[in-house]
Image 1: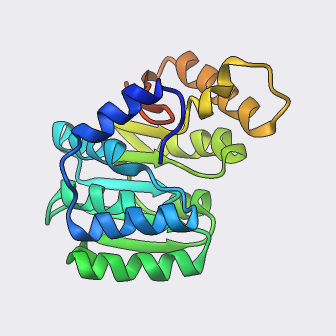
Image 2 (image 1 turned 90 degrees about the horizontal axis):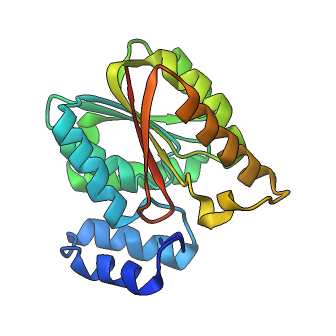
Length: 210
C-alpha cells in the first residue's frame, strides 16, 4: 500500500500516526497485502473522506474500485443522503465488495457496476460532485475525457498513482509511465481544472473543475 516516492522513514512515520482502523477496514487491508490487491490505503482513505466532508459532496463515482476499500471511505463520508457508484471489471471483486458493503451497513448508499468503468460512467445519468480515476494506467487519458463532462462545476476530480513510483521523472519506455506523464501534463494544462498533486503514497491529484 506504499508507493515508494517518500523517504521510507517518512512513510513509516506517517503510517505510525494513523489511528487504528475498524475491524472491517483492517481485514480488507490484510487481504490486500496477502493477495497483492491494489487498494488506496488508509492514509489516502482519510484524504478521500476529508475531501468529501470539506466539499459537501453527496454523489461520487469511482472509476476502478477493486474490493471496495475506497468505496467504504466515500460511502461513510457522503452520509445517509449520499450515494457512491462502485465500478470494477472483475465480477469476483464485485461479489467480495458487496459482502463488505453489507457488513459495513452501507449497501443502500452504493451502486455496484461490473464492467467497463468508462462506459458505466457515460451511461449513468446526471453529474457528480467527485469522480475518482484509479483504473489501469493506459486508460487514464480516456478516463479524463469521459470524466470531465460528467463532473459538475466546482466538483473534484481525484486521481490515484499520478507519481507512479517516482517513474514520472524519468524517460521510461513503459506505456503506463508515459500515459501518467501525459495525463499530468493535460490536467495541469486544462483551463477548466485547478489541480494539485499531493505527494502522498503514490501521488494523488486533486483537481477542482472551474
